[in-house]
Picture: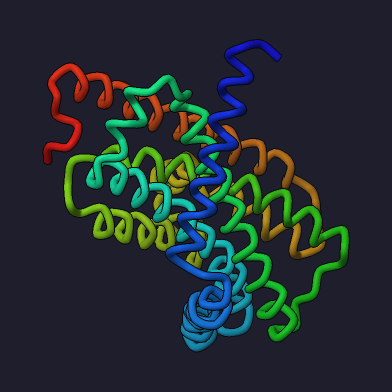
Length: 266
């Protein structure tokens, strides 16, 4: 491994560790399991029951899987955005960009931590909710589902990075990220099939994180495999594009802010 690779890996480890300690401070493990996770599972049941009364058992099963995978957007998209904005508001970003740390590695480490939290959240919720709904995939199905879920969570972290840059100089990060999460729920096949929208909306949705990964998860939880690998690959490609775009725009903004001395300015 060269010097650049070692710097990237070291910064990624540091980013992961700092994000882990920050999340433990914000959300202790006991609080996570006693309040946050039950709250997310109640959201899942809400969407499922609405779908049950609106369209029957088949739509309810569709909404159940979609609502579970949708939970991944909260630790990834929301946390990535909020912590990026908090770094700037609290003055930490100025130190990060003026020291010889590998910024890409630091951001990557954080993204991995938030993606891991999202995977744990969805898997624990699924292990409780799916059996209660009579949906029990086999061991192989669970393992494949974990792979599709990991790809989806990493992809959503890329979306969070891009959204974080968009709201970089505002005080409205939570408002904007909430709108993004709700838009994902509407247009990415969470409760309503993507095919129900006009063709141009369906094509646009396929270029947004969550859509392809969720479609793969549905196939795998249903016991199938055909087409899932292609959907997972598409999800990773979309997420990589968002991550690179978000990082490129962030880097440009940081360089412009350093040149003008305006990193902390709204």
